[in-house]
Every structure is written in structure tokens, then in C-alpha cells.
Image (cartoon, one colour):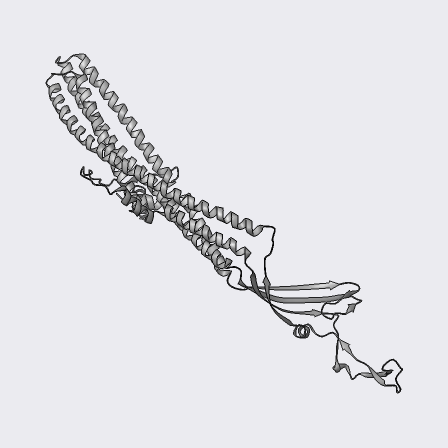
Length: 476
């Protein structure tokens, strides 16, 4: 019983794995998988995180800083104790503790403009990330449509092989019956071999198309998949396009590469304002709280007893009429405790400083000049991106128009080729024409079918390109 349960368990497990392996990939699934796993997209996503971190850092620059320090010192021999300001002839141990803070009140609005610049850089990096996703989406769509096209071509090649096989079987019977010459029979065999070779070539092309898509998805060596073949209706010959100018205006508002170039241009403008801030005075508020301990410090300890009179001393130089005597006492000194000294030695300091730049080896002028060049270069990049977009849309519009004309011509060609082949086949069946003329008509029909399929998918792809420039997601 246990063996039966184990067999059923592993059978169901293998079946589920097999079903998972045979799951078909739609275009949307391919695009989503690629955008989530593509290495270039991941690297661009890191750039977004880095830009966001720089923006957060610039926001934090508005807050005051706070730093603490602690030190322990040993002095050997004669030295001046910093806490008692007295000479020490023996070894002295001292500790110093401090907390300091400073806040920039004004620096030519450099912190404000830096924050704005970093925010624009962050927005630009998000647009660059979207552009990377769009690029991989276009590549995936192109490879996906190439597979669909190759599948159709393989289907046409298979039909040609089947038709040739039927004619070979028919001609074989006629040849054996003595109704046709051997040359006609051999000619059909030659055509069958040629069709089978063409089928092999098309199957190889289909495998190569799958390989290209697999590489774009960055799948492993042992990963196998099959695409989902959507039903793509034949395009309408009366299809109308939006004007290139209209598409261009929509693309300016929606394409990430244009928005990124515009944001980078604005960021460079903020960078110029940051550079000009180097010429501005700086106003800084600072504060320090400090304390310390010294083993050299002494204080009177009354707990050890009252002071003892040691004698009297004459005050003054001794030239006065009456001498004045002052008593002298011996006191009991001890080193105050660590906590006591930390409390007694504390000090506070608050200051405001103004720094006015006068001459700093031409650094401010260099920074401003470099920022001006960067701003002008960013403007040129923005103009170049718009010009490039205009050229791309013009080319895409021309390609789509040409694809529609090509598809219209292919529709007429396939209709004429089908009628011609039907007529030739009827004549061939009754022996009015030879195998050479039949094969010519057959090959013309196959060529027309291939051209129609090619024109159809090319037209579909060109339409998707125009929709892409208008900000429409790529779908089939």
C-alpha cells in the first residue's frame, strides 16, 4: 500500500513539473520577466537607489550636526596641566570630554539648490530606468513577432512538402502505369527534396528565433519554453495613421528619454546656482559643551581636619610705618573624585562665525565656468534628444506606410498566385503541362504566401512602434 502511495505521489509530482515546464509564455509574460530579471535593468535600478540616497543626504544637510569626543592622556615629566593651568612635575593622567554641534545658517542657498538638483537627478534616473525597460520591451516584442513569423513560414513550408509528396505519389502511379515519362516523375522527386530542404532551413530559423528570445530573457542552458501564439487578425488595408507631428507631440510628453534629458538640463541649471553660491558669505552657528578630569588637580578636604597655623608673615615691602602680619595655614589637599571634577570642570561655548570668501585660488570661478559648460551641454543633449526623436518618428511613420503598401501588394499577389496555381494544377492534372511549369507555379505561390506573412508581421510591428512612441504599452 505504501509503495502505491509513493508511486502516485511521485507521478503527480512529475506531472505537475511537466505541466509547469510546458507552460506557454505570452508576450506580456516575456516582457514582465525580462524587466524583472534583465541585468541592465537591475543596474539602472541601483542607479535610482543611489540617486535617491543622494537626495536624502542633501535633505539631511539642513539639520545641525552633533559630534562627541573623548580622550585620555598621560603626561610624563614637567608639563602644564590644561585643566589646572599649573606646572606638573610628576606623571599626570587627564581625561577630556566634549560634545559639539554646528548649523549652517546661510551659505548662498547652496544646500537648497543642491537638494533641488539631487531631486531632479533622482527623477531623471527613474526615467532612465523606464527607458531601459522600454528598450528591453521593444527587443522582446521584435523577437516574439519573429518567432510568430517563423512559425507561419514553417507552416507554409510544411504545406509545400505535403503537396509535393502528394504529387510524387500521384506521378509515381502514373509513371508505373506508363502515362507520363520518367523525367516528370524525377522532376517531382527533385521538387520534394528541395521543399524538404526549405522546411529544414525554416525550422532552423525558428529555432534561432527562439534562441534570440531566450537570450533576451537571459534563461539558462536547460531552460525550455514555448510562446503562446495569439490570434493576430489580418490588418485592414484602409488603416489610417496619426500624423507624424501629432505622434511627436505625444512622444515629447510621454517618452522617458525626453523627460530624462529635460530633467538633466534643469539639474545642470541648479548645479550652476550651486557653483555661484561659492562666492557668497557663510554664516555658521556653533556650540560646544566640554568637561574633564586631571590627577594633578587639588582641593581642600575639610574632612581631614581643620587647617593648622604655620606662623605669620609681614605683608608689603616692609617700608610702611607699622608692620602688618598675616597668618599662614597648612591645609589638607586631596584630588577630587572623577565625577566631582566632571561636574566642576564643565564649560559651555556658543559662537556665530561669518566667513567671507575674497580669493581662493580661482576655485569659485572655475566651478562656475565648469557648471556653465555643463548646463550648456545638457541643453544641447536635450535638443539632440528631441531631434533624434523627430527623426525616429519620421522613419517609423515612413516604415509603417511602406509596410501597409507592401501588405496591400502582397494581398493582391497572393490572390493572383492562388488563382494561377489553381489553373496550372488543373492543367497539370490532365497532362497539359509538364512538372517544370507546375513547380514554377507552386514555388510562386509559396513565395507569395511567405511575402504576405512577412508583410503582415512587419506591418504589425511597425504599428506597435508608432503606438510605443505615443506611450501605448506593447501588447498583442
